[in-house]
Length: 503
Image 1 (cartoon, rainbow, N blue to C red):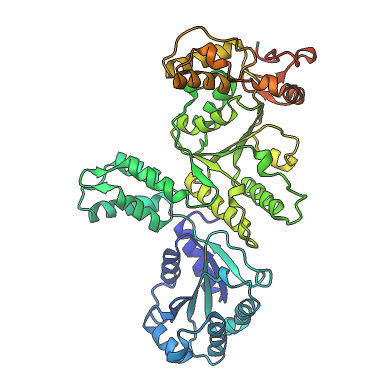
Image 2 (tube, rainbow, N blue to C red; image 1 turned 45 degrees about the vertical axis):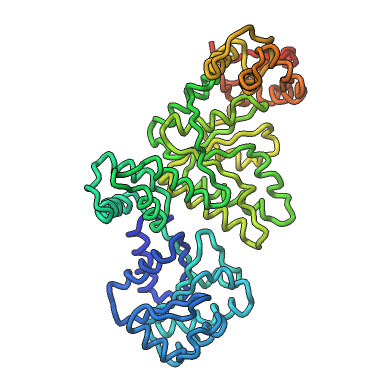
């Protein structure tokens, strides 16, 4: 895993010294990647540098490249298609017409599944090795080589700009906008807001957030959110919830608070809602897509040492709310991670989208992410995936009377409600919230509003009892310290619970 521009350049130089003929650079900013590759040649102006794309054909990027163009392609061949260009490169290499040249090939992932393109690229391997040339294929993050090329092409991922890179860029942007140099606080805030963006969108987001009054930090964060959400499956949660607005669940709030403020504190919370549905079919899907995506997630979490928790319980028990509030409580972003939105109808497209999303998460978190996954049933989750959530599995039961009292106080205050409360035995926090919201919205009393609510403890009593039996002695309690426990004869009684390790 490459974490800095210096490491990226070092690898490029090493590839050049080794005479690597075929190189794939996966990048979110092709212009930046081409600049980095070119600058890694130690300023040698005699190295011919060429570039090809589907619209402009072959173009020279320096004086030596102009001579190589006319010598290899001639005037008529410059606008040729990709297969003709690859053939011309092979013949030109054999004739030593452009020794030591570097040729950039833009977006080859759109073409390399075609048999002639894959063969044309492969044919350059030995020809370029002898002639000292290098074909640099510039692709988006997550692009996967066809199987015919995987053993012949070196793949290097360009990292997103580091914190140091952004701190160097920000003062220059202030100077261009004719603003005073930013102070330390403004510089730190702007850097935090831009981490995770490629160089070009980072510059654009910052430029659009500068005015004569200085930096509009709120606008900058909004621009950053919009840029991140261009990645399929990623959304930055914009709600303002914090742990203070959640009644009950004291144990999980206390535990997550310690994680978020402890050693190696995460820089981003990754929220996976209903994870059992997201990974349904892993290992059994005939296409193999879900199995591949599961393997990619497992490898990524293992390599990064990513921590996480699984929150299991009936609907409305505050699982998702805890996950959404975790980031705001620590002052870090919460990224909603939707695996189903990353799936593509194109061959290999789902894996490419997933790897691109993980690269963005990696950049935003600077390698320190906390994953919070919710589920209503854990039995379908692959065991190897459950093991990646190293911080434990917490069971969210229906709130007890004390917890319901705390929840009522929060929502009565939020909507400025008074009056006699309905019988709330077996209600979830979501149902208490909905009762208060309906009363406020429809000008009803709390008791009248309750007539339009059917608690999940009645509609899904059997499922809740099954969840309690499954959790007893196996999962941690979200409400009180220790392992969750419930009496066998009490599981059918709505809201009745006991806990081991709490007293």
